[in-house]
Image (tube, rainbow, N blue to C red; front, side):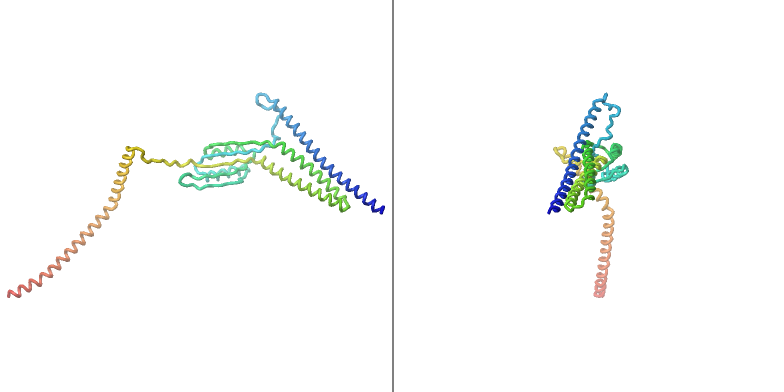
Length: 304
């Protein structure tokens, strides 16, 4: 009984040591996050000091902003002659700059408009200005706007949390290798799974944030000039008279054209009719002569 009790005590001590190490790892993560937050505040204070050191709107030497993480989004509305062809050119411009097209939609032209196209462009942030200049050459820019979001603090916090979680994960893996009791192994494995899930979630957020920072998003809309339908219906008596006269002239002009087209055919039909009438009259005349000859012969015989 004493040996069993001593084994239980030793097991409880190991569990206590493992729990203490896990708690210490969590405390280390909290301390690291707090330290990172403090460093972020210090960096913000340093940026403010550099901002105050500007003279005449020009940053003082050493006051660089290249370390900032900025998300840029925007929208561009353009009027072009052929939206579909302009959309193809826009795709080529973006892809040549190393960007991509996340979305594209097109509307075919009809009687009222010449069609339209809209694209979601992902452009490398460093080449944004050059690509926008190339896009301007596709037509007339009706509206263009951009928005910038500074996510430097969020990026720094994510890096600190990921670094801390990786360190604590490696520490738990080392404890798991040394653990021999099944209870200790289960406890450590559960904690390891939890930490790895958190780490994967943070890394996914970091990848998404890096993509937004490195690739600016511009929504491009391409349309044509709308077709203007003019209502020329007469509104006054004089307008009605003029419209009626123009209609009469148009009718007579059309009628003369039709007469000119039909006249040759009418002449040909007239010749055919005249020929038919002449033929019929000749036939009748011959028939009448044949009928008159027997009558003449009978009258001659009676007289004899």
